[in-house]
Image 1 (spheres, rainbow over the protein chains, first blue to last red):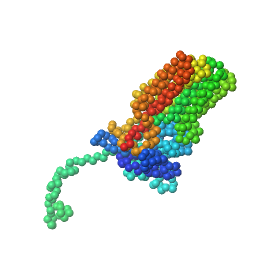
Image 2: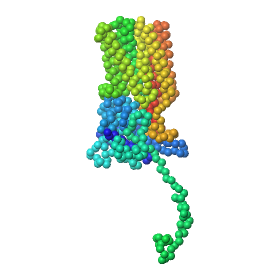
Image 3: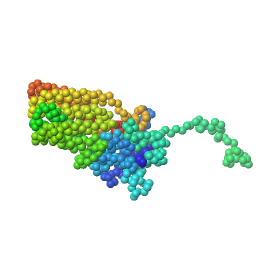
Length: 243
Length: 313
């Protein structure tokens, strides 16, 4: 069974918000209508975003690190937002596991947002229906796009390749291999929602530098500089260094 | 959670209507008043008025009220859907009950008013369960996820409905005032116990979600530096009550005083001095206290998504 999902690599996310803006652009200008964007240059901008990037500081000063954290609908395998919807507008597709909202059925009661522990569903204040990440379902199946472009807008926009897209139920897909190799994890596992989106943890890169790598034991640098020069007719390594 | 006034009015008004209807049927079952009396006719009309007012208030909670007819679709999985099915059925029962008394239908028999009333009681109980479960089934909202939520909701509805029935009986059927006042007082004391139990339970709750599980980093010290946007959003409006802590604490004391001791005192005074206005005042004070209680119920719930929205920058 296919379960399409994103894998977000927290090790390389730099918090540039390219995924936020490309998602907003794609979902505002498409068939599904606009995303609210009030007062964008004013005092209290507010709007509906399907993907947001947050920043957290981990550690105690001076040993702190900044973690940039993109958050969008995790397309849970056991989505709590689906059974609570009274009209059936919130549903999970059987063929690819994407959780979607039917804007024609949604009554905007916000019950699904109460039921989502991750806070990824937002109501559009103008259209008055609930909106969330669609995994760019209108891009990934669009035959008019070249195959390399049939990926979510955020995946294509990410400059550090922090976002990967694929089928997590296929063991050989790029995302499954990333989860296995880098120790990908789910968010808030204590609630049993089994989110399909995984996050890859930050990794420490360690290089062991030994003293003998910096200064050779058998030929310290101060002797290297005084290699004997060969006589004109003697064999040599490179016309300068004695054999 | 942000307390929405439309939902506060919806749940309190419907609760009063349900409690009042339960009082009518109980009075008829105990044969305290003969069928066809004004107590039943106007009582059913009054209960229906409260139910209709609650239903109208609920429409203001929806972004798209014109599609509200769709809400019955997912009754197999959604408690909100089930409530939308049971509420009109119950209201129809209340209307039938009132009409039965007005048109002089027999009390006994399969189509008698007592049978309609019994069906109404079943639907009333189902409606209490459905409305309570809308909140209690959300396992992420630990303050709500308890059987006490449904018990409190049902008992509040019955207590306030009986308080209204007492005041109503003082104007229409004075002989019923004593037994109804006794039941109202008993139910008020019962819900005092259960609501205190839920307040104690909520005070001792330990949140299951932490920033460590929210972003999956195992370090003991994690602090949010930016929630990703500067203005507000749905996530900062819908899940925070927006009031200062002092106000929330004072609302708690307000409802504890206005729902329990003051109405009981007014009841006792109304009985002692034979003053219907005091009995009606008891209901009004208790209803005002219930509005505060419902506000506090919403304000107290802490959604795990709040972990992601702590700081602007």
